[in-house]
Amino acid sequence: MLLRLTNIRKSFGLSGSRSYREVLRGISFELDSGKSLAILGPSGSGKSTLLNIIGALDIPDEGQIAFGGEAIERFSEKQLASFRNREIGFVFQSHHLLPQCNVIENVLVPTLANNAKKLRAEVKHNALDLIRTVGLWEHRFDFPGTLSGGECQRVAAIRALINRPRLLLADEPTGALDHEHATSIINLLLKLKDEFGTSLIVVTHSRDIASRMDQMYNLTGGELQRLSK
Ligand SMILES: Nc1ncnc2c1ncn2[C@@H]1O[C@H](COP(=O)(O)OP(=O)(O)OP(=O)(O)O)[C@@H](O)[C@H]1O
Ligand SMILES: [Mg+2]
Image (cartoon, rainbow, N blue to C red; front, side, top):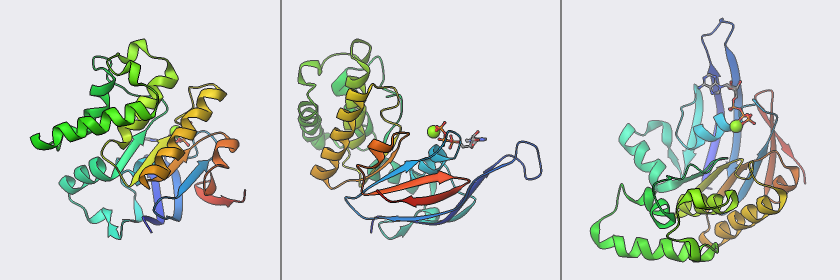
């Protein structure tokens, strides 16, 4: 098993105040290595909050997260930073590419923190391989401003995988795309998952996309309900 969440709770605002909201009210699930999981749910139900907690961008008020058998709530700040960088890949609804960097440079961004000189050539080779895999070879020196939304999202997907993370978190990765391009991004994420044995968690509003994952959940009222396909 790669990931186990046990009774995760998260609220925002001061208890008793008008803005107080219990967003996650005891979330538990397990995910095996190389498996995929979809999270559906209405806007504001806490899907991004949950993904941010799994990716250690936010901390829960209560509950445990075990990743590869290790309790991440016991990690120091330094361990957390390294955990995020090495083990987790993020793909967001908008691609967040750096406009002043070309495709190759964008893909290499996550490798800059821990890039020993002798590894640089190898990492660049991997980046070019991935760029070829997603059909962007001709665009490798292009800047995001000159690419389509779908092309930018493909760059974002391989950027998330360049450090070979064990878990890929995708928060509505197809939200800004039409049906055809959305399908091709999901095909790509599933193909990369199979190729690298990465586990995948996808937040989506599309039941069609969700049903292509191994497990499917609905997040409502702060709780996860398992959906059958
Ligand atoms: N940092 C924060 N401070 C205060 N409230 C927050 C914060 N982050 C999220 N919330 C609140 O938590 C609730 C869940 O937000 P979240 O972004 O997780 O929803 P979501 O399911 O991802 O919605 P969407 O489908 O629209 O992206 C919302 O009511 C939101 O206002
Ligand atoms: Mg969200």
